Length: 117
Image 1 (tube, rainbow, N blue to C red):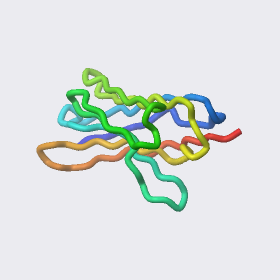
Image 2 (image 1 turned 180 degrees about the vertical axis):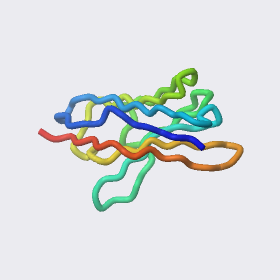
Image 3 (image 1 turned 120 degrees about the horizontal axis):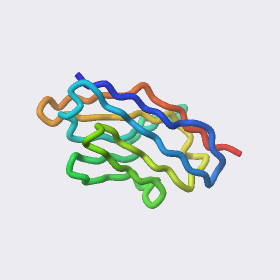
């Protein structure tokens, strides 16, 4: 089992920045991919960014050039640096992890990000 705990959400003005952290525990060394999904009211959950243990990254088109995902494998922690935030980035952000050999997905509890003046 893997547990994921997010931190770093909050309220920020348009154009501002936030950094989300996701700390993994339990059998966290088995996580091949980590990343973030987000869900805005009335919308489906969507992938924001993901990163593998080897450092390969993938981003949603809507955040490319503004968000950067990184990972510290020694600390079993992933980070999402969000710059130039827009009101449309407002959502609950969920940390996600995926284990290759079991194909299991794991989710954090979610953290609210609100971009508003």
